[in-house]
Length: 475
Image 1 (spheres, rainbow, N blue to C red):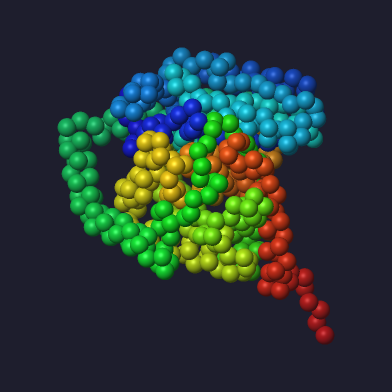
Image 2 (cartoon, rainbow, N blue to C red):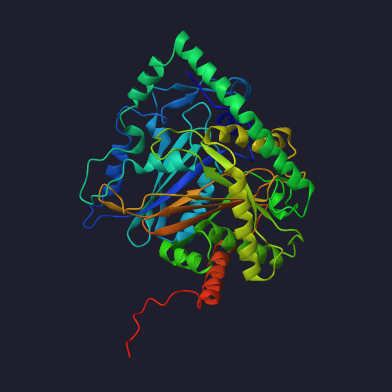
């Protein structure tokens, strides 16, 4: 068996009927030219073929009961996986629109995973307009984070549009080398060496962790401090209790467009994402007559996984920044966001990489405790909304000759956080996925439209700063 890390196990501990802790990915493909009528049926049969299922797709909870996954969370390998259950086929009434696809994905994402089985599902969805189909895949957050999830799905795709006979993501060769290496490092000598190294690391990072947490406490106690602290955001309609039903909406932008705007605003791409999200939220809440006087804050996951790390599980830290939703002036809003993210990054960078896991657990422990105690959505939130930006593949990819047109992240929400905004880059585009509670946030789909309006407005105001790409005539 393989025991779960503390952060991975926490996602199992807070699972409930209203707060399923799985995340998903929606991939939209265009069918190959001259694809036979049986293309998707054949694809489904290949996906269910009797291949050896790879890690982590073959992991099943050793003790699936609530008490078991709370007190002794561990994975064991399931060698008899029922792929007829995990791989499913759905169809939209032709020609299915993007809106109808969003409705179907919202319903699929609302259904919890079966804890007695490996914690994932894949749905092939046919009937999408313009000769397209979709793959919606979901997996429990205890198994993957955003980065590792994208890598799992990406590694079976090809840059070659003519490649066929490809395996599905779960039918890869098991990572036996990693298991062998773990075995060589086990035993008395290896365990003792690891324990001594852990003690050394703890002794080194403890003063820095104390200093970092003390800095957050100081910023929380002094409102004039420019470091955004946990619990500094107001209570809002985003921070109520949630039910199990979800809504999902998407938005799609070209990366070059966003980078041009970021350059003109002297901001980072992430700053622009936060600005668009904050501006859309401000407009959305004003329409509902529920905009708080204080600014909303964003909890921003930060990837701490090395570039060459192909492992799964959760490898993230967090920083908190202001969205300046209380600022009516768009230029001032952007400047406040830029300053807030700069201070948050500087604070996170005071810690060495090997201390970030401990820092994340300390920072997130109030959030986890709120959910486990039932206080989530009943008291001031740790932060108001989760906003993340996940890097995806840069090249155009194919699966069995079908071109991958777009990838959208479908995330999780919980009590006290009825909205999640996650962005995923792919082949020169940035794709927004808005996941919200169907009952707590009615008309949530407007947020996707409002981010587009905010981008148009930002471009118009920055026109004078955007360099003219047209060559000038010489006199």
